[in-house]
Length: 344
Image (cartoon, rainbow, N blue to C red; front, top):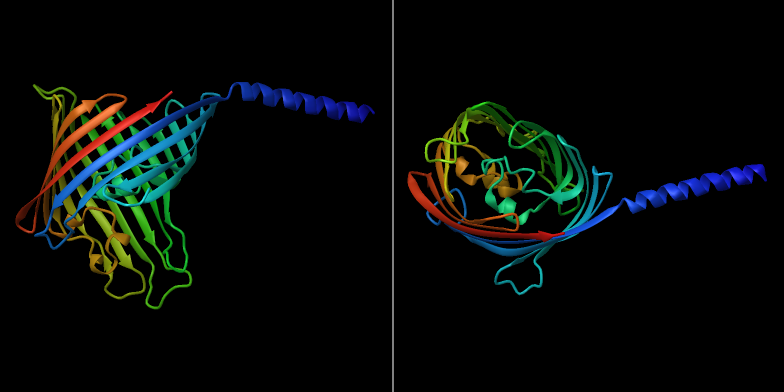
């Protein structure tokens, strides 16, 4: 009987502990709405496709948090291409854990991509990735703050091996360090593109790695401008189809950037000079290369002009014109994006 009483006391204390934890559990909800229209006029290019991308995305999420540091999210992201006859063309589940302190963030599960990788340029991830691949599947860990200095490591598992799907994943790291006006910026990833299971004849494992290290100056206020960024850096790559002679490439090039913000207007210019990239694009296309296809040329200039129509915590609307110089010709792109976020 004495042992039984001890067990009952332990169970009672455990239940009381669970009750106190349950009382501190906080529940929240939020819903995100996104609309994008991206019209590319690339018909004269031999490096990329001419197309129009337009869709609506709805992303509801429920959040359960405790102790102020631990957060559990569940929801989904549903996309419907405008003009489609389907109720939803693609639905992505969202289910992830977030540990968050003042200078530390840890995500694990299936979580939204765009904010976490917003420091990466489209040299690493072209715009269609941001539109159509809304979630990362894996782990993201970061120390520091985005507007000052930070370092992160992440894993994104993009393909589960099957008879029709290649195993594929990203391993990435990026960092930013600010010294008054001077800063250092680092972006990198390794993309591993393996075989199907069972493998088809002629399949080989492929690797695609990118690394960019830049240094520059940033002014928060300079004359009439709100923000000004000037930077220069090197973009190094490693592309390989394993066990295939002559299918290893190590392109390198120079990247220059100049960005300025004035009132609600922004202009962001990037210039690439160097070796041609995506050397196996003709064979693997966007399955292996997730970056900007214009980098397949030795010279590429990009200028993005933005107008922030609305910029609040709830509503963001932006109109943009993109100018591309490649293959000794100019090409144009028009973009409109609208984001609405509500919740408690």
